[in-house]
Length: 300
Image (tube, rainbow, N blue to C red):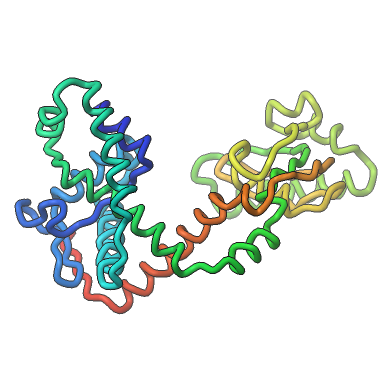
């Protein structure tokens, strides 16, 4: 299992294809029918297996939803004659072979996991084929327009911010959320009126360890360093201003943006992130359209 996880982490695979590519006909339990293809319990087993620990927490129903989406996308790509570039698939499979060889006999490892090279090749091929499709339909103008409208998120701009944080109990009611939000709104007014500085208010009210240093969060870019909710609010609030209270999975926050350092990354530097945005966006839109027009039966 460890060898296969390493392969799939390196290859970035979180996919299942459904249909005969994963041996649907051999499985005992049929879970869904997507147009003319069956998805079975074997597909879900391999979906989890071929994604390491990433999907372990998902329910059977959630896994089946993923498998259906992946099957729809594969059918869509096949109907348009879009396939992964053979040389890229071969390159990824070469990486797979090298990693498997480090664990001993590659064939024995695959047999033990009930995974064939055809299974792995299908897993490698689908994301590469989808990337190829997206690059066929998204124009250079769209890439540039997205970069220009999200430049501070993409060019490495750094912002400095401080927060006041209040906890919300697990499973908080709407009334509990409202009360905490109202409390933070009152604190916000105290700061705006000059009764307290933001740092003084953070030391007095915040329930985060950052309270001791006046709520300072430090400097960060848009991606990868802070919870998404904090990042989005920080980058949508003007420098020197206070946000409105907002909720995250951790509780309720109030943020003050204190400084901005312009980024230097160009459109070319940001292309990988922009392509990822369009891949995710078009995936969701295409799945929604295919679900509306296709014939999908679930038996779970």
